[in-house]
Image (cartoon, rainbow, N blue to C red):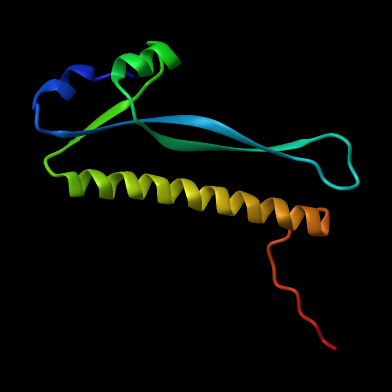
Length: 115
């Protein structure tokens, strides 16, 4: 996947967002087990520095995307959407882990109390 860094410099007044995806591991250990378990998800992140710093940090082979917006409001909306997606995945994983901790396995149904 080629990186498209030259397109970022086309407009000086453009609002630029650099994004990349990474695999994130959520580790947990069930109460009755000693061995940790892992849930992995691919998440999209916003890089808040320059392309040069990105390449320095992640290497030249790490794919990234550059989105250019004509207005700051569009840029902010895009960043907010990515952050919201990330928070949703984290919430789902936390709920999945909580259910496994509570029931010792993956539980996705409702409990009915017939008292």
